[in-house]
Length: 209
Image (cartoon, one colour):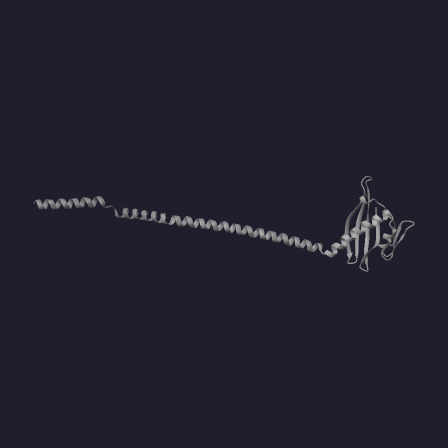
């Protein structure tokens, strides 16, 4: 009898222990799922963070690459623009030298008229142009409208270069202005230079009030 009672007591204790530790299967599954998700989140979070940082660095590098490309294209466009301007201007050293020489020649002719330097003036006249030293007058005949013109005698400080126009490879027009700022008066002088035996000569000179 005592053995039977002891057996039942052991069975009861076992049942109580089992009741204390057992839980609902669904509840256990939910808890297990939550623990698994937390573990997965803990495991994947650093990787996701690293991937995000790499993606951010990649985007920054791409932006810098695009900015560098835009800058390069802009600089290339500016270089092309400069190249086009130089082409339009015809940046030929020989032409530039001729133009500078003709501008200087125009100044020299006006200076020579003011100082009555007949020898120099005679040396730069083209065929068909002549000079009368007694009246200080030029005669230009080898042009569409032949005419005479008295010397222009102006102070060097009043003479200003204005423009240059190429008619053809052997004909250039060079324009000057004579300005008297005190008297508030001015007029323009147009020279026509032509090449004779590769030497520039004065073929015409016109005064426009």
